[in-house]
Length: 88
Image (cartoon, rainbow, N blue to C red; front, top):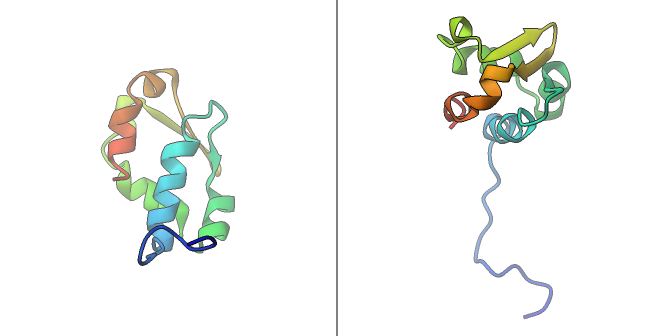
């Protein structure tokens, strides 16, 4: 029927899961993401989510956290799946 979704139900993702999806997509950008803005958007502590997810990767030099801006380093862009897998 026209005007209806082709599936029976719709279950929206919780805010933290939506944040993680945004992190995976947004970290593909060289400029990175503003964690403060994401925290406000999804009403979660984005910095805490990121630091918990990426614990242990600091010494690998895959990402840079400059104030509220999170971005991948050149090495991190080459090994981005390693970073992204932490958000799944």
